[in-house]
Length: 409
Image 1 (cartoon, one colour):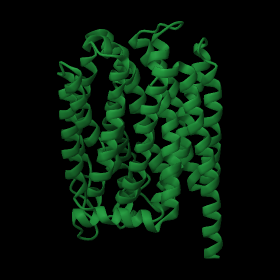
Image 2 (cartoon, one colour; image 1 turned 180 degrees about the vertical axis):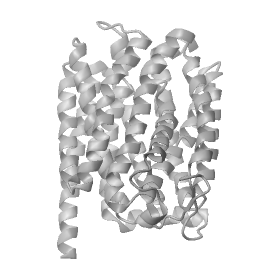
Image 3 (cartoon, one colour; image 1 turned 60 degrees about the horizontal axis):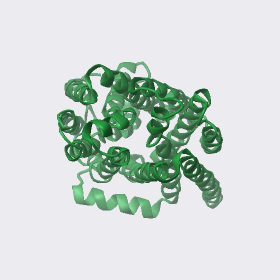
Image 4 (cartoon, one colour; image 1 turned 30 degrees about the vertical axis):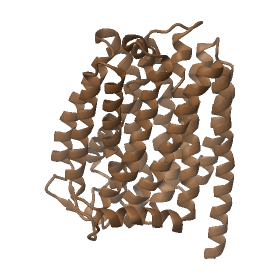
């Protein structure tokens, strides 16, 4: 498929066939690099705090700002995927995200770093225009597999960003990872413009109408609400971990360097492994079971993490499981909501992902506050509470699904 070919979102007839894996690979790399930039700060928080002469809690605010700005982008920018031509939109969003990372790379103080983080976070929602675009381009029976493949790219990107940023910071200071991401995004913008097919919305719709319809979709789709809240609770659980793990690993008894903390992030490879498998199981009609297993694993993960203050292997196992569990929940959530209204996937994704990242921002803030006021014990308690809430919300969603099936029967 060339960039000159056009898809109108009408289904598989206009999109790539199973054999066109190259385009899916490009989209997977794009989501990974775009979103990965939001995670380069996580293993660097202690170093950033020391270099800029601020507290660890203030440095951790960059994690929260990234989540909040990303959430605002999801709410206000992602609906444009159902309004504007997608290839051009994605190119512009990627360039603006690159600009944000460039500001961060040159930041002489914490306020400038926060500004760059906010800009990059808001426009990196290009990834969340790409994900529903994938569902538009493949046959219905392959949506779970395709979404899982692209989300694997996103997760690998986040994983590598956390890991490699520590290595780069050891080589050239904490500014270097931001500069590398900015340069990579500039190249990515050119690749997207060349490789993506043109995709215009099926019906004319103003931006205001698109935003209003997001609200209407939330009101009229009970499972959109239940799955969005389920995703938010799950992401809050993981955000508690990633907003505080740097301080645990940098302090006694571990005393890991930035590079070592970044490499410890490879424990999160579980999420990338789970994404494709979860997508395939959803295509096979087992999405509800996968979600329940993921929610249960979140609880188990925090039970392990709670006892890891003197055991790095136990911490790594807990981190592996918590990310694997989140993606099992997240991928099945996305497949459920995309089926609710195929003609409105960008707006459905906007509602879902906005709620999802509000949960992430809440988890980041709670994790930072828990570390400041109660150390790892408080962090563990906060993560466990969010994990239990995820299980409760899954039970409620199962009941809602059964009631919906009974009404249709």
